[in-house]
Amino acid sequence: MEVFVLDHDTIRAELMYLESLGARPSGSKPHNQLVEHVKQQWVDFGMRVYEDVLHFDRWSMTAENPNGLGLLIDGRDVAISSVFPYSGTTGPRGTEKQLHRLPGAIPRWAKARGGIAVVEVRNHEFPFSAVVETWDRARAWGKTTMPLLPATLAGLGLARARRAGVEAVIFAWRGISSSNARGQYLPFTLPYQSIPSIFVAGEEADFVLDAASRCRRAVLVLDAVIERDSTMRTIWAVVEGRDARNETVLVVSHSDGTNAVEENGHIGLTELARQVVAEPLSRTVIFVLAAGHLRIPAVTDHGQATSRWLQDHPQWWAGGPGNRLAVAGLVIEHLGAQEYCDNPLENSYGPTGKPEPELLYASNPQLTALVESEWRTPAQAPRVSVPNALIQFGEGQPLYLKGIPNIALVTVPQYLLSTEPGDYVNIILLDRQVNSFARLLHRIDEMRTNEIGTVKPVTPLGKAAAALRGIGILFIWYTSSSHKRSLGF
Image 1 (cartoon, helix red, strand yellow):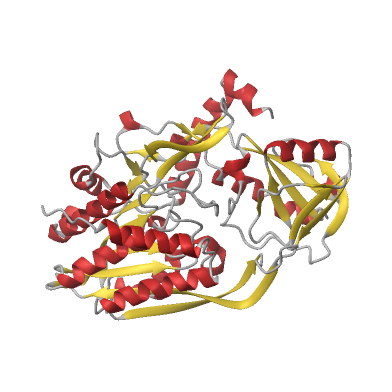
Image 2: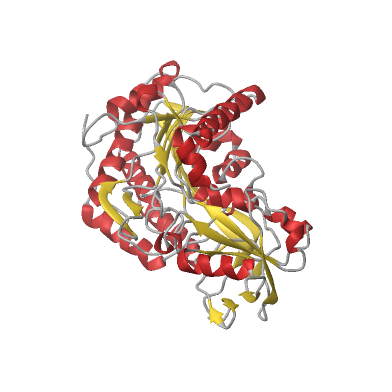
């Protein structure tokens, strides 16, 4: 099969453009600029581009307000690692309250009523196989750290904190370096919390925890603004098939992101669009660049950002009278990710010189075999993961939940949600991944629908089984003596 090689100068130009934009929170000016940039590229190919304008209330920290964020304790300015997005706002004057240290995995929020709660968040290594299973059990995922998970779990307590009368919350990171913690846009999947919250790390976390143990007072300023009825745009385009026009293949990514990896999937979408426009396939191909991945509660109450597009446009995928039928999907996220790690022995954080392990999903055994045949890796065959009824990272989840067989790349490096710049992208790896997606798209187009296979329906029993499996793995890990000591609960 032909190898589709991208022009590396084109890749570099796209990455430089992403870096020039910086972080692209949902509905921000840089986010809109990227969407317009991609739209123009598609128009230049001769594609008709459709837009879905999504309205929501946008929370943001304004760059024009340098005094809008700060933490002062005992006359010392404390460095803030990051702000909890959509947590809340103190207004320009901030809030001056007593600190209360709340120990334990489940804080007793009432003890901090009327004050500022200080809670530890532990970024401990955990078995990734508890949340992501592989089709080949002999190649199960090992242990990893992922700031997204502990930050999200910690954030789930904010609603209780607000109801208990807590004025603000400071999360003190453990198990993560200050450099790694800096600029993490975490968590990003929760509704607006109406309680201002921040993260501190390293020596600053030690200082804040000690001050809270001594019930010192602090001044926290988190002067975020809420823009009512803000907008963002999902764009999409259709390239009609030659023969089986009523069967569609969805090619999906999202546009909002934090850095040059999260999200650069538009590079893959644009290259595949260029190829398909030049030489249409047998089936119709629909390219979707979804908005709202970093503000999922604003666009859907179930699934991820692409869930909204699926909800609004069933005529392109649902089948049945008057509708086309999506027989497969490709989901392209986090291309070319380099590995970064904390090194506790050297007290450092940075690149390891290796690619980040690829997190590749396939919805069924047929697509797993296809990935193993067509995905290009420099050494051994790719490790292919199984979406389950409880969790699938990335924008492949909405397709899976709707029964659309899909292959998804959604690698999760430590810096995935960091707004800090870095040398995150390996261009050769990115080229190889996009080439692999091109091969997959052409192979899927050659397959009969029954050869592509189906997706096992998601049921409450399936969700329960997935939850029990994950809990079982985590329980075994937790009760082992070494991890029991490291948790410190």
